[in-house]
Length: 73
Image (cartoon, rainbow, N blue to C red; front, side):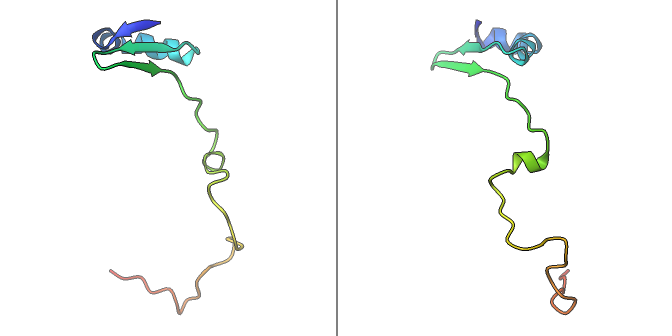
């Protein structure tokens, strides 16, 4: 589906629903063309961070002793 910027802003809810159903919406502007599609949300925070966070130690135990924990105000 192709629309212009003004029509896209006026009927955003309609285009958002179409994108959610898998349809791509092309928004034409003076400077170019933009593609509006829906991105699948991640199921969990761990799934979103998969491959980006590396655990080197066991995080179920405290990482600092009581002597090293000195919060500053």
